[in-house]
Length: 311
Picture: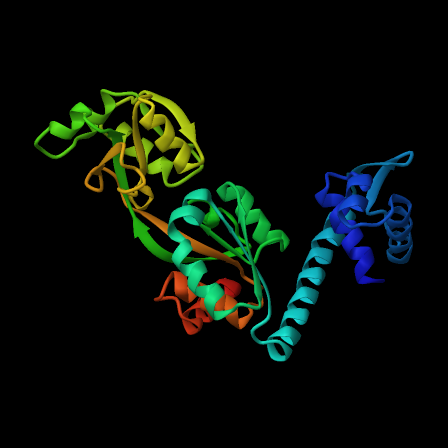
């Protein structure tokens, strides 16, 4: 049994049982993958993949367990490699952060700038996606950390650590009638206009919906987007008023827009970092988290991981 054979198994499953795509992803040949998988099946005495001719069509019941164990072995093998790197190349390596557009564009720049200054030999990569996508990136090992507001709590494989709380602002074209209310904005005020805001899976959208529903209001959401800059663009064009994370409004860059604080209208949201419970983090990964959320020092992170692992 070889680690490479396990990698082949896992990649074929990951690519939807498409051996050709797995071969392309692993930079090897389709016949080579098929041969190694059959050799492993012969050694184990079970059929991992069910085939129709030469085509893989499904995963057998024992195969599902083999894949689960294979993923764990490969992850632990990666952890072993990281242990060696931690002591032989303390300030070198790579760190992949999976996050949403809003976090990457507005919350992370200061952290990333300081991290790169401190660790110039660490290759840092930012992978963007939906909350579901970024959590799965961490689970599969494509990323080391997930940073998001939604979704992390849905994955039992991930430990979830709160980073900071934030709320929302209402944005509109300069000169909009909401600017001259002379009183606190209400949900009824907002609901009179078309609304542009985040897609349901992003940036605490569920709390926006809940606030309107609790007040028996049915807002006219005319456009949703995963990208705050897209929301601001269409508000600038007059499509409606926008509901965005307050941190995403930049007065100088967004001079054509006016923002009104709406923290009294919506529940605050919490951005969190998600880490695989069985992860071995390099020292610089702990430092990245602490730069982003100063209350999360290494001791607190390790304590949280131990707690999650024991539950």
